Amino acid sequence: MDYTRFNQAEQIEINNLLERKQMDDFVNMFTNLVDRCFRQCANDFTTKAVTGREAKCVEQCADKFLKHSQLVATRFSELSQTLLNPASQQHQYQ
Image 1 (tube, one colour):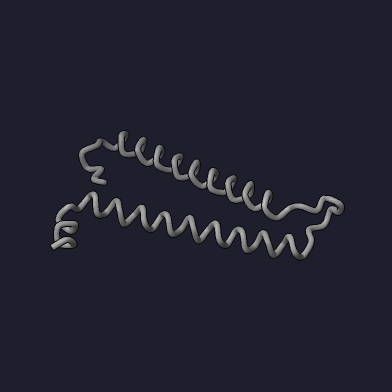
Image 2 (cartoon, one colour):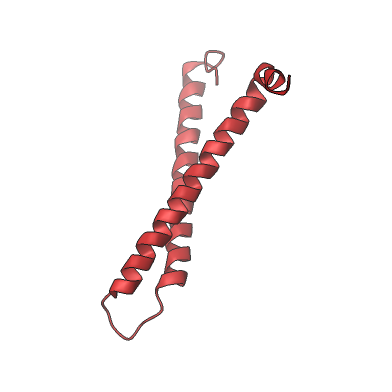
C-alpha cells in the first residue's frame, strides 16, 4: 500500500489500526487453537497432571492447526497478489 498520499498523522493512524488488527487476528487464532486442541485432547480430568497421551495430542493438534493457518495465509497472499496485479493473471492464462 502506498502511504505517500497520506500525511504523517494519517500514516501513524493507519499503522496503529493495522497493528491492532494484527493483534486481534493473533489473539483470535490463539484462542481458536487453544479451544480446538483442548476439546480434542483434554478428556481425562481425574488428575491434575497432563498425561503423555494428552501432551502428544496437543502437540500434534497445534502443529496441524499452525500449518493449516500458514497454508491459508500463503494462499491468501498469492490471491491478493493476483488480484492486485491483473497483468500477471493474463500471462498465466495465455
